Length: 148
Image 1 (cartoon, rainbow, N blue to C red):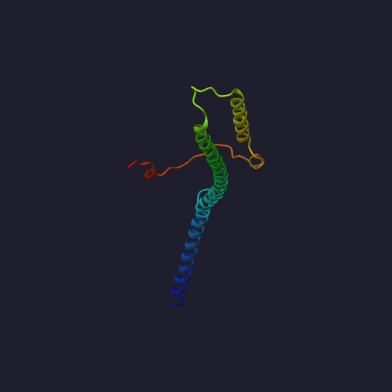
Image 2: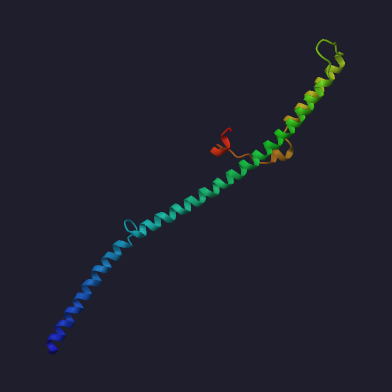
């Protein structure tokens, strides 16, 4: 009876050893950095890092574009106000049939030229800011473009 128990114990030990050998080979293949899950995790980790870098770059570009757009909008509003004032002052100018003195017309031309040059020159604040380079894309909502 002791011999049979010893034989069964040895067979169980050999079976467990063979099972451990098979499991260790599978685990090595599973953790292989080139073909297994370890490689997939390494590749995904590198892709996440690349996506984070590109996201930060896109945020910086969009912030710069937003600031530039705000400046341009502000300048456009001031120019629109000046144009409205000029259009309102056009009512004071005599019509083409009446003769206007040449001195008044020359002074008006000089004043208009000075106002135009003052508007076209950027301020020191605008010159200091770095304008973003590259393309600027704007996504429009379809519901805003529909006409009722």
